[in-house]
Length: 407
Image (cartoon, rainbow, N blue to C red; front, top):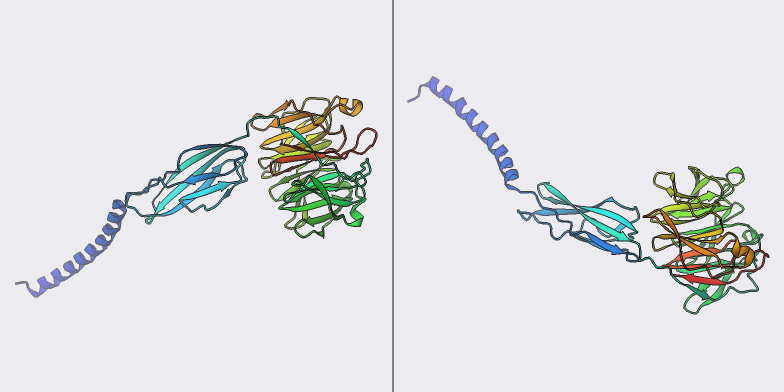
């Protein structure tokens, strides 16, 4: 039998032991659960290769597993590749990625379990340019002769809005081309004060057309046929007339051809912002490939613009002695229509064509000529995998009303 003193000594010991055992047990329970749980194993699926014009691919993480069968989250992340993509559902075990352009993409799949353990795997998608073919021109319905006489003092442009090609005549009449019936239909007129605006800058963003001339800017909504006045473009020393428009994402970068200024127009805020200057002079034409703008200056020097870093990088130049250039992009390539040694302009010969491959940084003259009139200011629109070209004026300041498609 314990003495009273013995009981007093024994009781704290029991209490102390019991308290320590309970704390240790809870910690051990947590440790045992964590130790017993195994991390999941991510499987992002096989690497893939597609060829333009295909621009979608399926990301499939269904090969992922977990020894404890308690995966709670999947997450797809693009870790490299061109910027213009859309992931349908980044937290789905399977999803579709779209708006792919030529280049190599890496998509990382992160798989997480209920204890927060995770693993990652990467799948690569290579998007190749379309098989290199020269393409063919097709003659379409000419523009109405009574409205379309172009000279050096007249408006002369084409613009693609939604799925239609529009043209503006010398008197400001506004027409659209209907491909299923191969005809031009009059849509109305430009606002009166725009009809005399020379060397207009035109572009479209998110199916809305923008027209800039003499500093004024108007917006055209093809869905309802409405014109809206937007903020005037900078004029004077910082003007954006005589500019090469490069539409990257949801913004237009206007490269000055009489100066080397670059102005970004953001339609969401209706604002103009100065950007880094073109490191050259005499910007002449341009195009956009894979979300990057390319500006060709008068003597054929080519500059690539990266909007994400607001930086210019010189690329391979065109061969010398190409004049009256017009540019467009199609299926991941850039194209130039031009007059080699002025033979088209002076001798009524055909304009030649050059193709730019951004993956090789290389220009190549192709075996297909532009069949339209040898003219200044040939206008081009790339729309739904087809290029439309025409208009302009020749050495005698005579009309050029022919209209062509290229694909």
